[in-house]
Length: 308
Image (cartoon, rainbow, N blue to C red; front, side, top):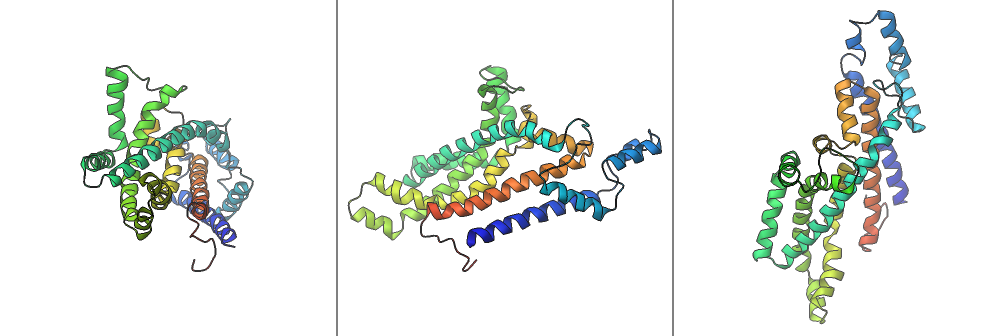
């Protein structure tokens, strides 16, 4: 019952986001063809508006927009007459997804490892070193880190390629630039959670029973301490896998971020709305899956509607 309720809530959330996106676009003064009104005949501009149904009343436009969404049709791109929004997302998503998945794997692996090491060496040198790295990682924005990585690894040392895409080597620097900040956040989350868990009575009981420290940490400590990190993984996963606009722009990654930024400058409303709904749908679905996964990570959590 809980799963059905959460699924319906997910659908309603996507509908609300899609509706708000549509309304916001309509509240912006002018339309994509406003700049052409001064250089093209009025009849041509009116025909262009009619082609994209911009001459219809807003309720009619909204009904057509929702109807297209129900068919998974995000509409045509205004700036690219030969491509639809679906085509643009299909072209940009693989690069964004590849970069995002690599970044999330790096952030999770090294973030969890760093947090665990820091917690198990509380108030020792390794703990201080890990937290200094975490503070620096959180404090330095990715758009500052990215040029530094390019300067040293691509320009000065010539170790890795930059400003192109196609091989694993091309993805290394943008992956590092994307992963450092979430890595630092995961490390801090895991350290705090691990310290709290390791002071629980059941950990002391397991130690008194003679279980090895490795088994206690692995079977009891990490499994319980990772729950707060899982809550953070959902939004983190979506933000990375759907593309970080600045990083994609700096490293010339042909991902969704590039198309989204271009669509804003070109006032390509279908691309803006389609990309926003696409991002939001991935986020909502991911959060739904994260909620369901809690039950498998910690059997004490019951999936029911009581107390929701």
